[in-house]
Length: 132
Image (cartoon, rainbow, N blue to C red; front, side, top):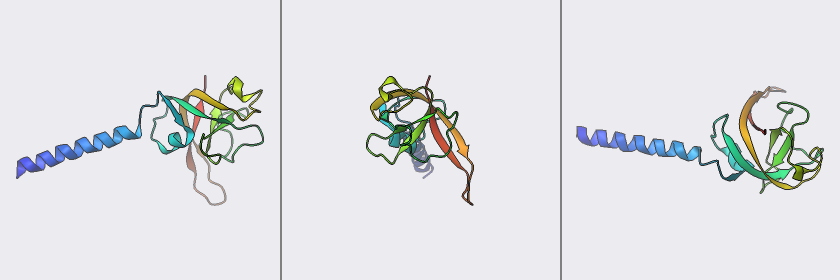
């Protein structure tokens, strides 16, 4: 009976470890904004992400810019209602100061901060990207 208990424990631990790895999939290949926001990719990880540059004035309400007023937004390839802030210069395909809505692939580092709660809402964690 003890041998079966140990076997069940070992198999259970192996299953847990396998599940943990699937949350941090291989991010060296291109992924979408929506996939990133649903994942547990660690802060500081460098990833490749594909999406649309959102032009100035067409941004989604994601709270204040995380680093500077020149931060821009990258929208998901499948949904215009999902976007993420990017701190750093937009790629040339975005046009001067991010004025064009073009499909781009960027390499960026994962960063996180907290947005203070307003109107009785709790503060929340936010994921954003930093480009070189």
